[in-house]
Length: 59
Image 1 (cartoon, one colour):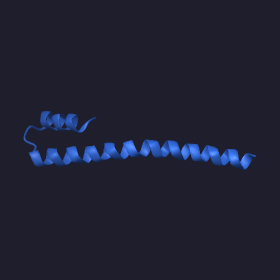
Image 2 (spheres, rainbow, N blue to C red):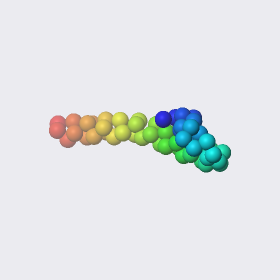
Image 3 (cartoon, one colour):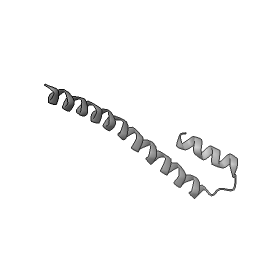
């Protein structure tokens, strides 16, 4: 769910939610998405390094 989608869902469920609550929720979701975006390449790198280590040690 994107931050904008989360904001819309909050508005649909509870129209009286304050704009500040919506803004903070949107920011938190954006940070979570940025963290996931950084984690995926790091995870791929870790797998590659692990494979390299295994290949190096098996020679």
